[in-house]
Length: 392
Ligand SMILES: [Zn+2]
Picture 1 (cartoon, protein in one colour):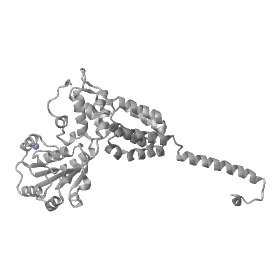
Picture 2 (tube, rainbow, N blue to C red):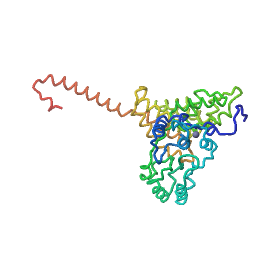
Picture 3 (cartoon, rainbow, N blue to C red):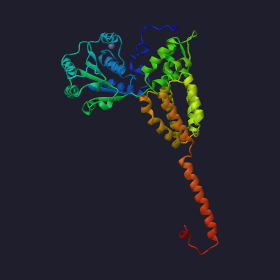
Picture 4 (cartoon, protein in one colour):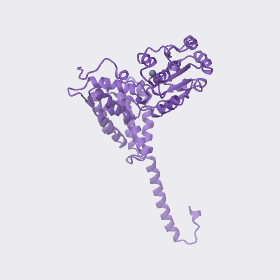
C-alpha cells in the first residue's frame, strides 16, 4: 500500500482537534449554551457532558478548561492563546488542569486524591479544574466521596465530567451539574466536514464517498476521521479517494445494491432478493454490515413516508418489516453464521411482503358488505312497509 498524500504521523482526530468553541463541529446548541455561561460569568461548579462516543465531549471539556484558565480572554469564551496559561495548556502541560480517566481510576481512593488536591490554590490560572472522563465508571463509594465536595466546592475548583452513559450517573451528582447533551453529528454536516479535512490533507473526497463514511460512523466524528485516515492511504495517483476502495475497506456494500435489495423485499420478491444477496456476497460484502445498512435504509424510508416525502410505500408495511429486522439484530450479532441469519431475515421480510395486507383484506370485506347492502336496499324497495332495521 503506497501513501500518496503527505501525512504527518499524527492521527487526524488529534491533528484537527478543535481548540476553540467556534471550531466545534455539529454542536451549535451546546456551543451557544457554553458561550452564554462563560461570557455572562455564570460558570457552574460542575459541567456534565454526555453523548455517544467520538462527538467531542473530551475536546469540549478541555476547551472549557482552557477558557476558564486564560487570564486575558475577552470575552471569556475566547482564550487569548498567548498567556502562560494558554501556552501551557496547548503543550498539555497545565498544572491546574487535571485529567482523570475514571475507567482506570474507579475507586474511592482515587477520588480522595482529587479531593485532597482541591485544597491547593491554582498555580497559573484562576481555577483548579478536574476533567473526569467516563465518569459513569466510578464506584458507588467514589461517587459518594465526590458528592461531599460537589455539595460545597471551594470557589477555585471546577469539575467537568464526561460520559457516554448518562443513565449510570447518580441523580445526586447530575443535579449538581449543568448537563449538556452532545448530539450525533448530522449526516450532511459530517460529510461536508470530511470533504474539508480531505482537502486539507491534499486529497479529493467526493460527496458519495463522504456519505459512505458518514453513514458508517453513525454521527461520530472520531470514527469518521479514523475511516478517512485509512481511506487517504488508499488514494490513487491523482489523490482521489475512490468510493469502491472505501466500501471494500469497511466491508460495506454499494448503497445501490442495498437499495435494490430493499425494493425487492418490499415488493415481496423472495427469489430476486436472494439473488441480490448472493451478488453482494460475491463482491465481498460482510453480512453484518449488509444487515446494518439495510436497517439504516429502511429507517430512512420510514422517516420519508412519515414526513409524506415518499408515497411509494405504506407506513404500516414498512413498520412491520422494521419489527422483523429489529428482532433479528441480537441474533445476527451473536450468531456464528451471520450469513444464514441475514438470508433468513431477508426471506422472512420478502415473504411477508408478498402476503395480502391487513388493510386490503378489510377493504375487500367492506366492499363486499357495501354491495350486499345495496342489493338488500333494492329488494326492500319492493316492500314499502318493511322495517329496515329489523332486516339488518
Ligand atoms: Zn490566555
